[in-house]
Amino acid sequence: MLEFLSRRLAAALVTLALATVVVFAVVEVLPGDPALVMLGTDARPDTLAALRASYGFDQPLAVRYLRWIGGLLTFDLGSSHAYGTSVAKLIGDRLAVTLPLAALALCWAMLVAIPLGVFAAWKHGRPGDWGVMGFTQIGISVPNFWFGIVLVLLFAVTWQLFPAGGFPGWQDPLKSAHALILPALSLSLGEIAILARVTRSAMLDTLREDYVRTARAKGAPERTVLFRHALRNALIPVTTVAGLIAGFLVAGAVIIESVFRLPGVGQLVYDSINNRDLIVIKNVVILFTILVLVVNLLVDLAYAFLDPRPRVRT
Image 1 (cartoon, one colour):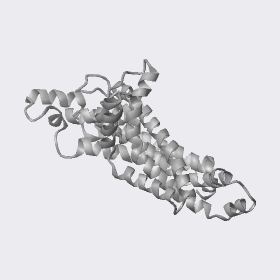
Image 2: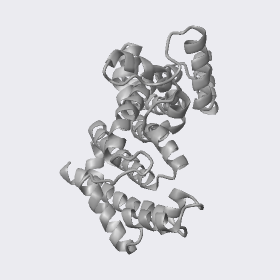
Image 3: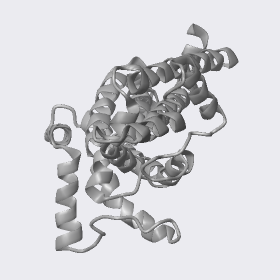
Image 4: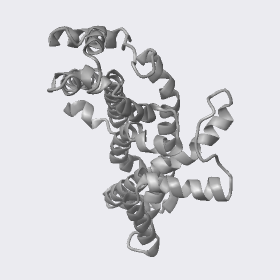
């Protein structure tokens, strides 16, 4: 198990190192003057020179890259020229919204998708299966931002059960969680459809195994066959897909946060692109990379727990 974990951790570190090179190249090495991008073409030459000096754009590429990596290691991410504050504090404040939103969306997706997938596999080839598959097709096809607008019109404007947007802060946890319900539902729609399909497929494969037929031949109740014998093995591919979805939910919250005007990392990226705040964009992309790598590492550990065979093979 220790060797398995060491291999996965080493692979994650190599991936992160390569990601820093790619992000640095895209933001600072490609043709173009970052200071000119930030200030616009009408900026005065002395203002451009001052900005280049303050952000180190006048330094050699190797020095700039090492300074940035050193800042990442010491959590000194620099300062945002648009917000006039530390990038680390800026991102930390926004994560307090994005991470709970993504976690709530993931929990909702798994709580809905796994029972739907099990039900569809149990009713394979019957109207119940067709209904679930029809729902998942709609879930994959409908854009989540459009679904969010529909939820706002129904639950915020018509029935006034939830706020239409905004975030009150975590001073009142219940009120804050209430404000995240509609965004989480919108964000999880496509993921519910994907997870339900994966669960159904995995359950169908598992239900054809000999040990399942043996359990049924011994007279085990159908609920025991489905949830005790079949579901645990079916959860192995579901766990892998759930890990990929978790990373997507964090990175894919940009549009949903814009629709509901939530002050999260996604909205920060959107505003930073409009403000040409490149240092914020660069550090947020690396943060997303780290979050995805951490989630994938946790998924590998969960995979090893559910199926011990990878510990031997890798």
